[in-house]
Length: 162
Image (cartoon, rainbow, N blue to C red; front, side, top):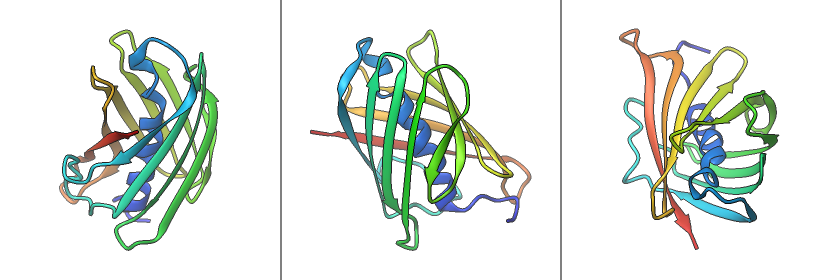
């Protein structure tokens, strides 16, 4: 795999990291799932081709976190993933299209720090939820480099689905 990450992997990384912050902003635990849809118009994929779709469901209860993701990469190929873990900064397995580990830790400012580790790449994310809890934003930086030798960065924006 070249130094550059594929869109499918980049999307999977950031989506899965985004999931960790959904309940953090509310200061309360949510036992029922929350559903989010990728907003392609508000997202900025930079030099990475935009995916066709993305949807995620998050279940958070106290320090426990689980999520599922499904979507399509830029070519329409399906992406699926699931996670069961905690907000303790420890890596837990991600199962699905791109096996990896992910860890999440709540920050004092109400955001969540996420780390995604795949065979040869790591991505760091800062994840936040808007005050009205209708928008989820994920700012990502990967160890993968672009053609200029700079880390690949991208921002994904999700809208809450009622």
